[in-house]
Structures are given as C-alpha cells and as structure tokens.
Length: 347
Ligand code: SAH
Ligand code: SF4
Image (cartoon, rainbow, N blue to C red; front, side, top):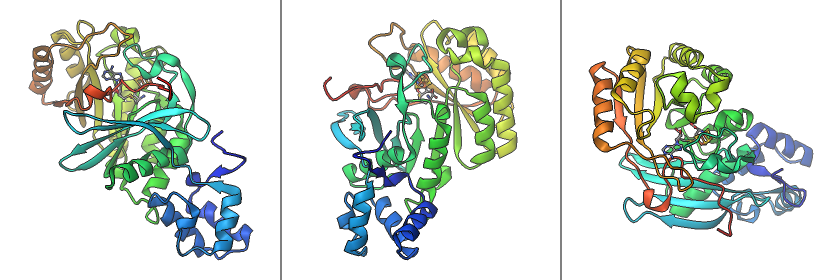
C-alpha cells in the first residue's frame, strides 16, 4: 500500500525488525539501533547516515525508502502562528497535519487515515468517506517531517487530525510504540492523546494496551437521541454502553478521561443538555473540553454563541466537573478541529 517502486517504508519498522534485516544482510545487530536513531532525527536519505558503511547503505536503498511525506502546501495562521501542512504520501494520498505552539511546547495534530468512514455530520473529514488507513511509518513521517519543517522538537502529539484512530487500531498501536521507543524519538506516552468517536471494543483494548496514553472521547451529546442525529457511530454503540466503557477505562487505568463536546447552535447546547451531561459524569475522573463548532462550508450547522457556551460550562462546574473551552487555533487557515479534509494537490 505505502510501497514505492517495490520498496518498503523503513519508518514502519521497529528495532527488532531492523535487527532481523541486519541479520539477513549479514550485518552486525548494533547497526539496527544506529539506523533507527538516524531515522528518528528526521534524516532524509540513507547517505546522510554518517556512521553506516556504504555497502549497507546501498543494500538499504535497494529494499527501502525513508517515507517522510512530501509537503505539497503549507500555511501559517496570522492570528496565532499555527502551521498547517498538506502532506502527500508515496502513493499520492494526501492528508493534513497541524502544529500548534503553546507555552509548554509544540503540539502536532496528526492524521491516522486519509478520509474517514464515520460520517459525523459536522465534520469536513468525513465528507469524502475513507480513502485508506495510514501505516505506522506514515504517521511517524508526519511527526518527523513537521519537526524538520518548523526546525524544533515536537513535544506533544494528538491523534485528532483526519480519520478515526480506533478504525485503524493496529497501525496506531505500532506508531505509538515507535514514537515512544527510547532509541528513537523517545516521546513519553503521557505526552500523547488519542481521540475516538466512541468505538467501544477498542476503548476497552486501548485501556489494556496503553495505560499511559491520554484518551479523549468525542461525545458531543448528553443522550442517544441527540448523539444519533450527528454521529452515525452512535447507532452501533449505544450511549449507555459507551459511558460504561469510559467509566471502566478510568477505573482500569486510573487516568482522567477527556470528553470532547462540540457546541452546535440549537442541537446540543441547551441548559437541559448540560444538566443531563452532568448527571451522566458527575464524580468521574474526567474533564470536559467544550469546542465551539468550527465552520465547514458544506454544512449548515452554526457554532453556539459564546454566552451559551459559558452558561453550559457554569452548569457543569456547579457539579464540580472540570471543564475548559477550547481555544480555537488556526481558524483563518481552516486548521481547526473538523476542518481538515482530503484536499488533493490541485485544490
Ligand atoms: N475521529 C476522531 C479524531 C479526529 S476528529 C474523533 O472523532 O474523535 C477530532 C475532534 O474534532 C473530534 O472531537 C471531532 O468530533 C471534532 N470535530 C469534528 N468536526 C468538528 C467541527 N466542525 N467543529 C469542531 N469540532 C469538530
Ligand atoms: Fe471521522 Fe472524527 Fe470526523 Fe467523525 S469527527 S467523521 S470520526 S474524523
């Protein structure tokens, strides 16, 4: 899938697999760690790996390529410095990534799929359906290439770009381990957040597999009736079961869960909705992130008014529920939540 001229993307391989390749080549096993280290630095060509003998470089070039995605287009917000890039993968699939600068460092929002098949009615990514899953090496490539582009380390990763991470679990799991590897990029699991629209079996699995990674669940409603209007996934996974899985996740991991709640005018933003949401989650180890809906030109939803969002927040807080209103970054370059799309290089 992500192969180029019959070659494999070396960024998808972990150190054990690289060791096996070295063995097959008749090379010393320690070369694997050296190569892995070079790759994690964002090295663009095998020839730049200075301590690797030229014979091995030639062999690697025959079988592999370094899958740093090509930057087709980039834009920078005049308001807050947020950077958005359009990446093209080896097979021509395009995805977007966004890098935000916070006081605590650089945070990248990466895509996990080209497109998405979940069809949430307020989101631009879902409009064209799913094109394909990204591989672990392609996700790592998004991070490494962004670091090369901004010339600074990426300190946090959120899997909140295009796609549904839990609809591509195996590749996402492999990516998390690759980026966390001490011999590689060495990013702490605690500095990573995965966001899901609520695929229950995968929430359960994730709680077992990745106890230190943060989990955000896109809830966007206080009950099934409202949730089903905007999120088709709610038809497969009833609200009650989703809440049970979320609660079990917090108990199993001892970690706070984040609920994302996009505020849509007249759909989910009433005082009754806030009361109902509060009654569902009061006393939990949780945090609610209220996201003013971002405009998507094909959709007629509107963002809730600021005073309504503030009133919603006050109600949640009256139940001692931790709640923040997400600052919208990069809205002038369509880089905000739900605005990423399957842009190809021609539009
Ligand atoms: N598929 C995952 C992660 C990517 S979407 C998920 O749905 O959680 C990242 C976040 O942006 C989700 O919380 C999603 O619901 C939200 N979102 C989508 N469209 C939006 C829009 N138009 N305005 C604000 N938030 C939006
Ligand atoms: Fe897919 Fe998330 Fe957009 Fe829903 S909100 S269509 S799950 S990317």
